[in-house]
Amino acid sequence: MQCHSMNAVAKRTLKGPVLAAAIAAVAAAQTAAPPAAFEVASVKRYIPPLRPGILYVARGDPGPSNFEISGTRVSVNGNLLALVRLSYALDASHVSLGRGLAEWATGEIYTIDARAPGDTILTVAQAREMMQALLAERFQLKVSRSNQVMPVYNLVVAPGGPKLTPTAFADGEPVTRDEGSTRMHLRRRFLNFSISDLVEWTRRSFDRPLLDKTGLTGGFDFSMDYEMPPTPGASAEALAAMSATDIDTGVPIAASFREQLGLKVVRAREQVEILVMEHAEKPSGN
Image (cartoon, rainbow, N blue to C red; front, top):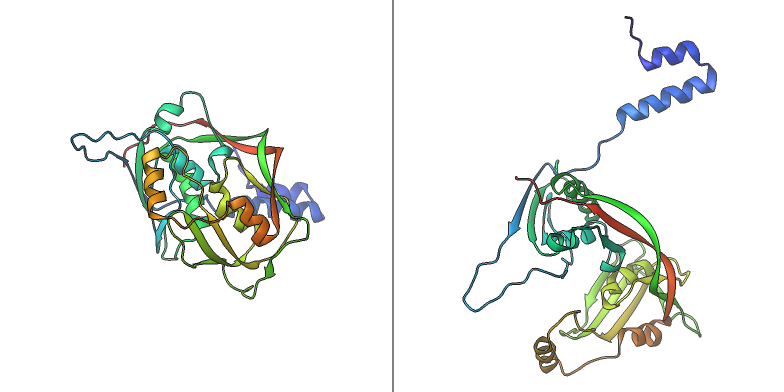
């Protein structure tokens, strides 16, 4: 049997622009880069040391706040739900657990240490892409997306217009600077922040998704001063302890948006894209 390459067949049967397009498509398929992945990775279940009289409960979703990135190395820990949220940059309201996953996906903590190939310092976006590949390989994670109508908060421009100054640092990365925050009172300066950056920064302070409906584009410089909302599920003792050490509280975050930024938080119902964790298994060995 005589075999021919796709390029050879295309050259005999196609002409002109069609031939060029066919050859370009084949070349693109042959040279497409594989999905970004870590070179090596360790996944271990974390079991805290037992101490008499202490009850450890892993259930729930505290959620890691970010990856610890050092050069090409990435470290993170959390339950599977928290790891998925972080890897896909979603809050809890945008992730749905499939049947049978709720028990162990929120009840077992894992520590992941990984190294990317090469010697280029990783960005957070690259770490997220590689972590998605790791979860698919080691946890056999399969996800899908669906749209659901759900309660949200829309962030809109308040009457009187925004109180935002176009950034003086347009060539720089978005950064924040602490201006005397305490445990329950945030005082912070934001530089070159877009509204989407602001939504990402503050979304954990709301009990439902916060959606940008302002129509504002570009980066801005501004300050925020507001009282931090209590952590969901925090005990009365923990709340009392935080209050005792932080007498100086500020305005609620929604009031801070309105009074300090000229933006308004409005209750609404919107169609929101949800990431559905269809299937996952306990991780394979290292």
